[in-house]
Length: 127
Image (cartoon, rainbow, N blue to C red; front, side, top):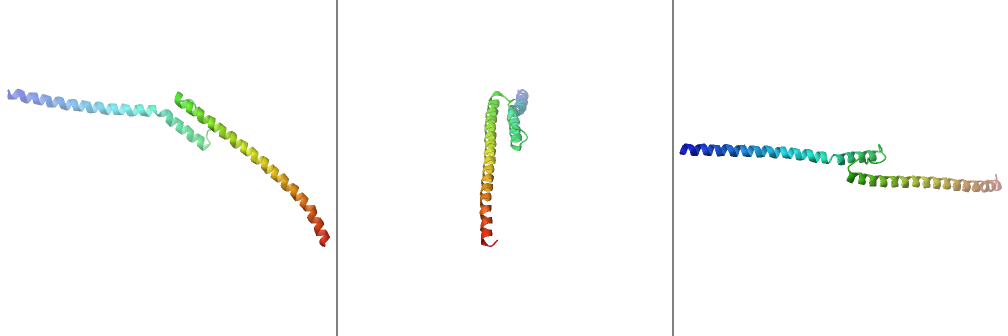
């Protein structure tokens, strides 16, 4: 009877060892698959991040919208904001050019009106 008990205990110990080894292996495989799934699932965000970096560096003018639906909507909204900002910048440049031209004309007009007066004053004083 003792020999059977020893055999039974050995078999139970072997079963537990195999069970824990199998469960540990399965857990490692599941974690690996989960990591791959997360990496694959976040790939569109990495592409969007890289595309946004290109826009920041001036290598692209707008974001790529060939993304999953949720991100494509976000990219389209961001492109609309970028386009609006570009229009504001262009309008500001145009306005600054007009102001510079107006100041130049006013300065030339002022200079031309001062010059004859200064000449007549210098000729009257002894010139």
